[in-house]
Length: 190
Image 1 (cartoon, rainbow, N blue to C red):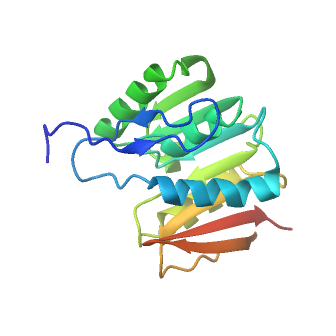
Image 2: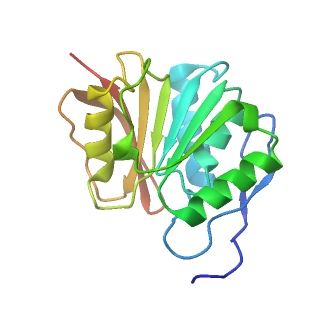
Image 3: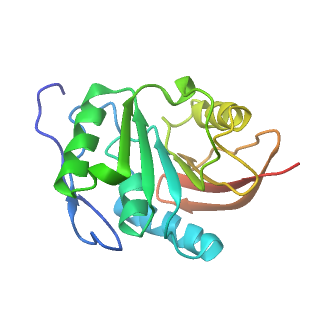
């Protein structure tokens, strides 16, 4: 509901800011990724990437920014946070300020679909769109065409537990169910 205080309870799982609380957006528009789900996701990613040191990351449909902030906490060099909900943007900016991560963050109040052409591909793209909309698959396809996702980019997409993902030009390397969520790790293929 509008005007309600921001929900809390989310925490950074690991790294420099481990245990630090995160604000979540007011209202019911955003569904923050639970700590347990993030812990599983970052374990899946770490087993493939190794460490996160120096990575360039995007957190799309960012909500509270928990995914991108988790990557920064684990050593990522920079994160682009994108969300179009004003309450989400306020929560992201508050979390970045509380963690003193302004110099490693870029926040855009926009749709993930509205990003222009990239200067270079990112190392990791994290997407947590509204469930059962197909928005994540559409965004991944468009971002690949615009150069945000390259051959070496790891892509994480969270969907509802029953959803499957099939995106032309991408291979689903791994899938794991956690609670109501299904985590997909994807790579671009020729």
